[in-house]
Length: 287
Image (tube, rainbow, N blue to C red; front, side, top):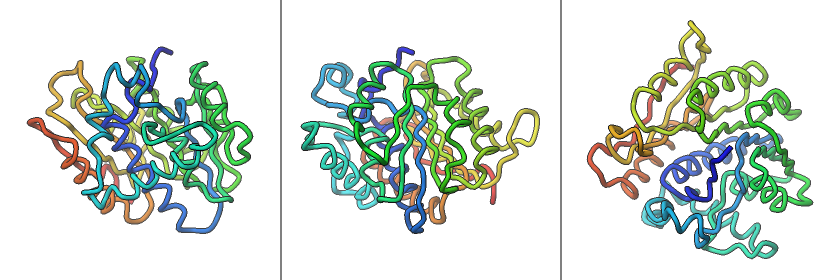
């Protein structure tokens, strides 16, 4: 496994994924019962944007570097970033130059009755994640394959939860693995909310993913209540570039489509500038 998210932390894909993740979690917390968040590919948890890796690519400048207080739909996302920086600030010397990954954002939003399960296979990233959450009774960190973690941690004892599957897409069959993982997650935890992140380099792979998720056959899941949110920075004609990103949400909480539409539109205004840029929300399967 060679992927290191520090090179890409805070880029436009992170902004989209994390803004929607924050909304999903806070929506689930409208009910008082405890819930579990399972992050299958958690990364390091926190990235110093002034560090060598982030400076080398500078991707964050075209992402979180452009998100400011002019977009009300992104207030909750920006507040969650500040909450995560504050949560880890004193002990880990975290400041405004640090960007929180999904596990750090989730941890900052957990209520006392909630828990986070974070899985990371990369040895160094797992070590960073363990240091970040050392002694935290609400978080368990595991060095293991994220796909395999689904069978171990679903369903949660609380019977309520959100599962984020966010693989590095290093393998040519990653879309197929993502569909297989969704199948496992749905069989084990049919009442949970499931979020699947994917890159958009060309249109064909993401369209195939959508088809596989909702087809009854062959090899499809026959799922219901499926929504895909996508943000394109440009027309996806160059497969060597990350042209966009998507998040498929299965069984989203009430109000997701309206809120996600506003979030995507705000991100489009803040981040997009090339021909073919687009924010779209597609219902793949009805309830």
